[in-house]
Image (cartoon, rainbow, N blue to C red; front, side, top):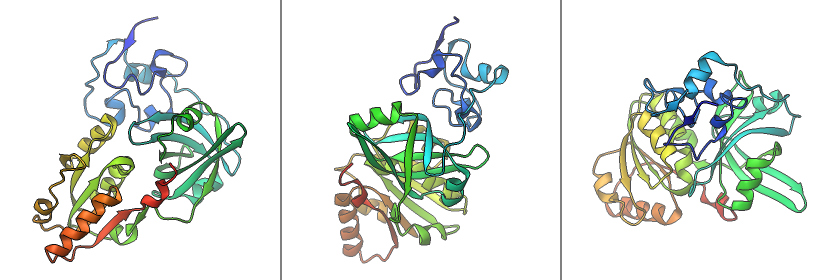
Length: 284
């Protein structure tokens, strides 16, 4: 078989080595983790040796999806660990479940068949109506849970009433404004979807992004949001607040959120804030 090697993200998805599995549905969704062109980029920077995924996509059929699952089940199509910040999962769901979910809906993924027991929170990042699929940010760093999610073909889905981001509704109504997004840890998984939502309303988004997986960094770059890298101990909060933002969305840990609110108080600034619900991750 012709060599199909690619250095950048080959550890994220190795199915490109098997032509019966690649290309898959992620190529159609512009979410292929291997090919930058099939992520929506204008050009390919993959530096392939041999025949690339995009060529196979153009001239081959996409690997078929399984039959639609039952109402409260989901077929796990692809699962990618993005250490240290959880997982990205692409799942096929029933039409009934599709109608009940929106972007940023919060769900729990469950599998209870001892000795394998799994209960992890996840947030819907995007809904693909035509394919009956969803993209999920899954909040677990437990290696056993990650292994189960990569190997289980099907899982139970339960819709939760909790909010993934407090203040998301007022944030979603802001238009043509200057907004700061701060993200670290699990919150990095949500960042591209939050930026996309804000930009669709004409907002100018600046993103302070703590160390995150290269896939997340590339997605944020593709959205052309201004990126300010930082480490969790040295975020220049007061310098950022001097830029006169209309709204702040912080997808970070509570320690950083406390520093932010204290700085707002010290500077006598009344800027509305949307906060990541960190209580969801206490057992993750």
